[in-house]
Each structure stands twice: as C-alpha cells, then as structure tokens.
Length: 71
Image: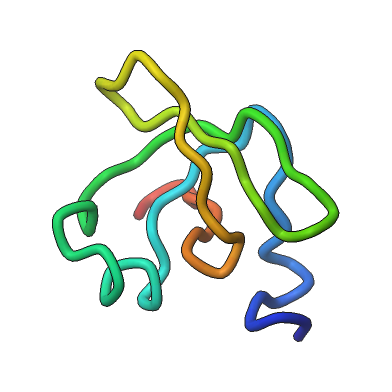
C-alpha cells in the first residue's frame, strides 16, 4: 500500500472510477458520482470527467478507486 492506495487500485486513463470512502467523507455531495479518468500525474493528482459534466476536475488519487464490474 502506498499513499493510502493499494497497488491493485492504480488508476489509468480511460478507467472508470467511483469515490473511495475517504473521497465520500470529504465530498459528501459527490458520494454517488462515477466518471472516467483522463490523466494521472506523478504527484498523485488525477484529472477526471464525472458523468454528466462537461469539464474535467482534479482530485487526489486517494479520493478515487477503480470501478469494478458488479459495483
């Protein structure tokens, strides 16, 4: 585990994601939002496009987790 994110939870561009428990607690209005990863920086910033939004937003990688099938 590194920076609160397990190695198998690495996000890559075009991955679908949801907010992690930390992200949900810090941003309650976004708790049910899903989206697509646009880019990931080395510093831990992830640029995403939330479903229904026209413009991308940037979050720390610890706020996000990959969306697996069935969830």
